[in-house]
Image (cartoon, rainbow, N blue to C red; front, side, top):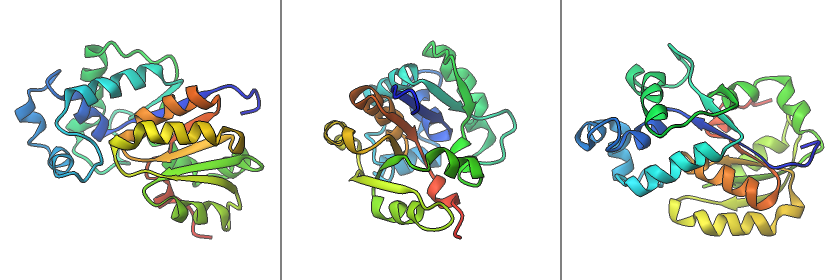
Length: 215
């Protein structure tokens, strides 16, 4: 943000792993046995699923991202079966030839909001929030103990809104310094696109709002 250069951070967890595993390292029948996949097919994840075109979009976005969050071995932070975590990442990344230059903990979002460095880093910065209910996240960021400045919000609930959301973010580029995107797997696609379109920082914020301090 100090250098005013575009930067995107995406995170790969069990959902992203399942999307990438479709007809690549796993047959579709194995993918569709997963509870996450069943929910996605029912429309609960805001993505077209099963869908290999979407799978390829996710792979391209991971390749384009500045920083990629991956789970450590023996992760205990996310509630998902162990075989859907780092082990599956280690299968899908080679398949798609994904070799991120910069990596971090996939739960950096959840960890950061509990640390003083989160407030320190974003203090004085203009924040764009993208989510199904962005006003709720805006309120959490603006109240104690964060007292951050949210200058714009965009509602997002489904993959079909990707293009519209990127266009909207581009129009708002003079009103924000960093975008916090909580849109499930769609955030992996949105973050690099918004960073490229606006020249700003775009972060896959995930479920971090649920982990934020109350006071």
